[in-house]
Structure formats: C-alpha cells, structure tokens
Length: 163
Image (cartoon, rainbow, N blue to C red; front, side):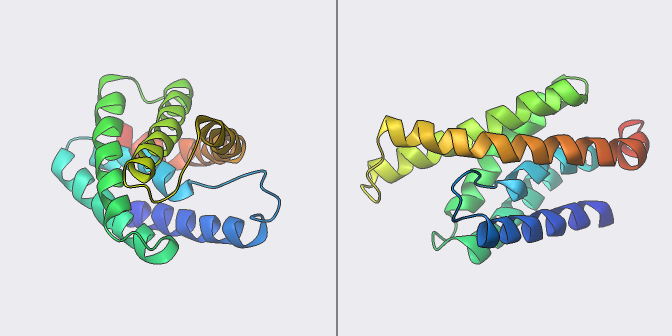
C-alpha cells in the first residue's frame, strides 16, 4: 500500500508541476493521476473492491486539487478503474498492454468529459476541440507511462505480479 500512495503522490505532484509550468505551451496536458491507477493496479490485483475504493478517493483528491467539479472526477475515476481492472486482470501485465490501457484511459476520460460537458451545456465543445485535446493528451502522457513503467518494472512489479 505504501508504494501505491507514493505513486499517487508523485503523480499528483508531477501533474501539478506540468500544469503550472507547461500550461502556456499547450503541447501537453497531463493526466498523470488518472494514469497512475494503471500502475497501482498490481497491488490490488486480487481485490477489486479495494482498488475501486482507492480510485474513488484518488479521484476525490484530484477534484479537490485540480477542478471545481466536486465528485465528477471521483465518479469518472471509479468508472475508468472498473475498466482498468478488467483489462489488466484478463491480460498479461506488459508494456504493450500498459500502452493500450493508457490510450483507452486517455480517450475514454476525454470522451466522457466531452459528453458530460456538452449534455449539461457547461462548455460547448466541438469534435474538432475534442481531437485537439486528445492530441495534446497523448504525447506527454504516453511518455510518462513509458518512463514510469520502465522505472517500476525492475523493483516494484517483480514482487507484486508473482502473488
């Protein structure tokens, strides 16, 4: 559990730093906290309930720190965690599955936000805006996932996945 909290805290801090220092470049929009659930999964591999509860509270922390839509991201994190759990539970935990799952998470999260915002007429997005947002999300987030995977692969995953 200690490693999961460390991964979540590092992801939140990095996301905050990227939002502060790189937001003016519009090259990359981080989703590090949400993507950290992919790396937190191996600890909860045999406990779906605990993984979903952890992801809900991580989403709540994300809401409190980054957005003013309280509970929205908690629910989205919970829904996406449900899919992460089943994707990673049914497939071997390797680099290609991590990238596939990351692409799915980035796409699914943004499409859900797009649908929710347009349904409630909060922000009027177009499909062109959505494609622009997705393009900005992919570059940095896939780099983050790749770096984190290879850092954690040596020490963290060896012990957890064998259980």
